[in-house]
Length: 126
Length: 219
Image 1 (cartoon, rainbow over the protein chains, first blue to last red):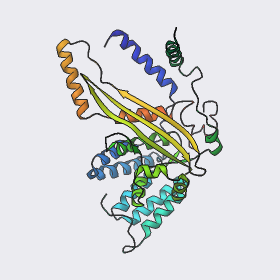
Image 2: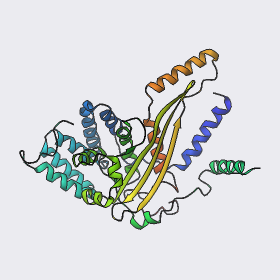
Image 3: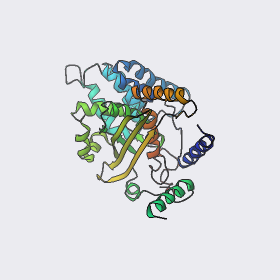
Image 4: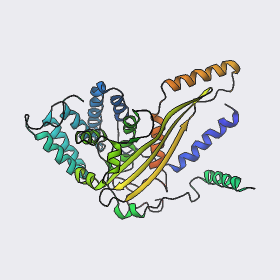
């Protein structure tokens, strides 16, 4: 790398950074990488589940806002494992924190409340 | 000075003037009319040959939208629920009516994303990794386009100028490694940030940002 490149690259970065507004509103923990890991190999569903729970626990401990969708994602993994009542609780949490989710969560609570032997929402394994 | 160099000079001036000058600005009139609070990201269209690209991309898009202040529907759950309803085909969903998705999910807006490029090209001794994306946000109430953006991000591993033959060999090895397992995620994140967070072209602040409805100077 030449001296000129060395001097110019941080300058260009600075210019580019000036145009971008950056916030860190929520603590996402390892949500992004664990979702990526899950898509890479669905056997990693345990890690995804643990990272979602960690986001919820950290936000509760710090009395911080939980990112949108996290309760619902975690609830959906519970539903896929047949833990319907845990799923319903989490869908209700999503709904009470984020009123925008009400229509979708009400629908999913109905799905999760369907008694076994009715029409199951989906197979247990992802 | 010919026309081409005039254009080139003009773009250079714009680049260096950065944010101080008036950069090109998106027409936000429809966006402002509706002021969406929530965004549903639907299955991503894939025009690349990497079959995993849409899933991997999905792991990068929720955070920047939520950080911008929007309610973002749980992307993985939405993907599964749509698949259960026979809507896993991205092309089908993109061609469909956003109003119907609005009824199903209660969302204000639907984000349609297509992956134009997601590839690593091996050229002699260096690899270029490229991610190119198109973003379209449509109203779930009126079906109108609220916002659009296009991003292309390319990455070339650092050239090693110092080492003669050894340097060339090192470059060839680096290129081979990149080719074997190119990491697209930083590029996808950079593209998302470039689409969403740039003043005048990105998304205005959402309802969970203190600037919601107060940033019309920039958007």
